[in-house]
Every structure is written in C-alpha cells, then in structure tokens.
Image: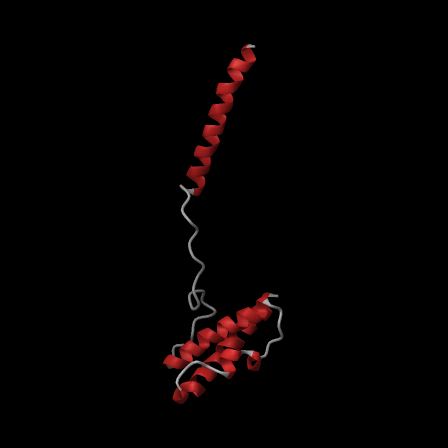
Amino acid sequence: MKIDRFLAPVLCLALLGSSAAAIGQYGPGYPPPPPPQWGQRGWDAPPGELREFQRQGYLDGLQGAERDFQNHRIWNVNNRDEFRHPHVPGNVRSDYREGFKRGYYAAAAHYQGAR
C-alpha cells in the first residue's frame, strides 16, 4: 500500500521532468525552418554573368533536373517541356533555353556525383 502512494507522485514528476527536458532541447514547438531555395546551397548558384532570362532558365533547369533525378528518369534536357516550350517572350527564348541547359546539366552533374 505504501508503495502505491509513493509510486504515483514519483511517476508524475518523472513524466513532467521528461516533457520539460524535451521542450528545453527542441524548443516550444516551432515549425522547422523551410528548405533552402534554389541558389542558396552554393553548388546551384547561377553564374553572375547570366542575363535575366538566362538566370530564370538556369533556375528552372535546376528544378527540372531535380525532378528527373527524383523520378529516376534519364538525363535529357530535351525531354523537359519547360525547355521545349518555355513560357517567356519569343525574343528571349534562346537566352532562356541556354540558361536552362546550363542549369539542368549543372544539377545533373551534382546529382550524379551524389549517387
């Protein structure tokens, strides 16, 4: 009988202490930080010499290659709809495609090294 009277308060204190330790270690439940955006990880930063639509194409090429990597597709920039039919004005399509190709193959080289 005396053990039951002693055990319940000790168990309550142990549970409260473990939750306080968890809050102290992990914080009060804030969400984790968002994943880094393209161009913030170092290897995927667009080269400085790119013009505006080349830079946009470069970043889109990185995303296209990442999708191909995640879906286990072969590396072929011509299979990407974004490359074949870019949603940019007609006079800058060649700039966009050039940047897209550079970004795509930069990401492909990175992911092939990661395997």
